[in-house]
Length: 136
Image (cartoon, rainbow, N blue to C red):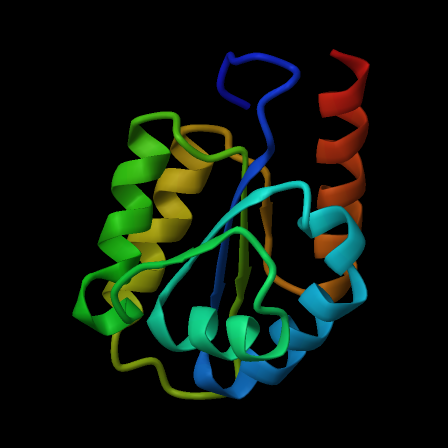
């Protein structure tokens, strides 16, 4: 996690492949109480679906993933502007923008950013981030 004030909100990125958008939206809805305290960034379609359901979240919509949203998030990772990445990947569908997926995953690993690819790992990552953030 980037060095910053304990009072600053967690900065979290939300991304999902088409076949996993429903799962991510459901996960966000289930964790809305904790996520209302965070500064959220999401790629275009995913962000739109989340805001349709939860319009009061502090969520910034970026470009659609294939149109540059993945690269916007990658830049944020490189600049230390994110505390966690929640990227629900569908391993069963062909990925026409597989290069973008690999690039974003690679940056999360290179910069040691907490990174979740499924609802169960997202639960643990979010709990860990909140615990670390409140511990100071």
